[in-house]
Image (cartoon, rainbow, N blue to C red; front, side, top):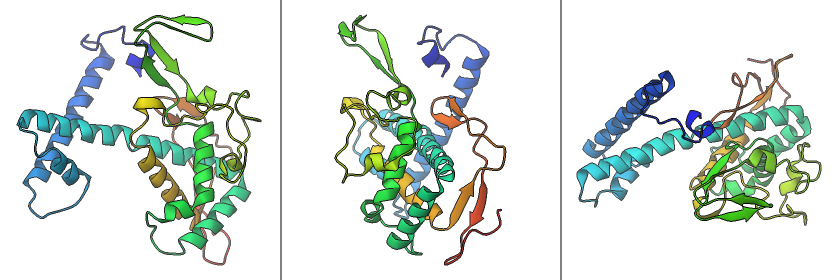
Length: 280
C-alpha cells in the first residue's frame, strides 16, 4: 500500500520501519512457500492438490533454481491474491443480504433447491443463478480490488488529459461501478441488474471490471466466482447472518476493500422447515 500510494517514489531498500517489516514478512512467506514446494517434491504418495499440480507443471524446467523460484512465486500469488479478495467479496455479500432479507430468503430457497443437503459440485455453479447475481452485485458495490494500476506504454490523451509515456495510471472500479452515467440508481443494491434474461446492460463494456480487463485481467476470476458462489450458497441454506445492533460495516481501502476492523455478525442456524434459531 505504501508503494502504491507513493507511486514507488521511496525506494524499498531504504531502512524505514515499514520497509523492514515488509522485507521480514516477505522473507517469512518465501520460507513457507519453499517448505511447501520441498515437501511436495519429496512426497511419493501421489497426492493431487494445487501444490502437486504446480510441481508437475514446472517439472521439465532444467534450471532447478529457476524452477523453485517460479513455484514460490506461484504459491505466493495464490496465498496473497487468491484468498483475501474472495473473503472480502463474501463479507460484503453477507453484509448486503442482511440489509435485504428478501434477497437472503431467495438465496436460501435456491440453495435448497439446487444443493439440498449434499456438498456442491462444479456443475451446480450454473444452476445457482440468483446467488451468482448477488455475488456480482456485491462486487459492483464493493469491488474487492478497489484500484487498478497500469503504466502507459506511449503518450496518449484520455478525456482531454495528456498522459505521457511511462506515466502510472490508476483506475478505481469502486467509483466506476457507482458512476450514474453507467449505472441507474448506482447506490441501490439490486442483484437483478445481472439477470441474463433482462435486456438492460451497462452503457459501456468496461463499466464493470471487478477482475480488471484486457490482457492483464485477473487469471483467477473464474475460480473466485466459483468459490464465492458455492460458499455463499452453502452458508445461505443453513445460516442467517445478522449484524449486531449498533455495529456498522465501513469500507477500508487497503490492498483489497476490506471491512474496517472485520465484519462482526450473529450466526443464526436455520433448521429445515423452521425459522432462525438463537444466535451463536
